Image 1 (cartoon, rainbow, N blue to C red):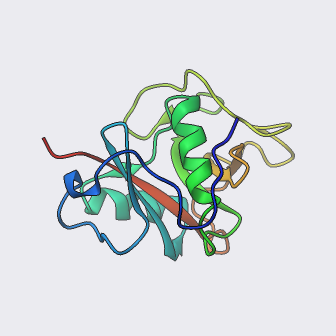
Image 2 (cartoon, one colour):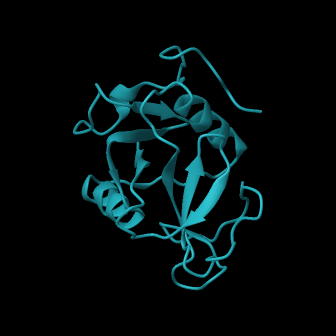
Length: 159
């Protein structure tokens, strides 16, 4: 089940005023379950560059802990016109092939991999996860010059 809504009419259920003040309120900033998400579509990057950009701003690439968050984010992405084919998420197996971990360290417990994923012909080269607009995850090369995608940074809400 995925949430869908007409463009611009998805309610996040949380107040973005509780997001860190340096984040752009005029962009694609949303809040859900005490977490702020910034969907960056204006500057597609490689996975590694997106990761660094999120960290520089005090966040991290998004970690999707369950179906509720997955459904919310997929629904929100469906309301955007310029997101492209998918977004980088904070999941990789760069340290050990086949052992997928979130960028903050915890191993992957539940997943939403697309058909025949992770893997494929170049699976051993594909160490970073991209979430397509249908919510399924695909492994891609992390730092290839021609693989620039939108991405989602995740931030803790202010107390």
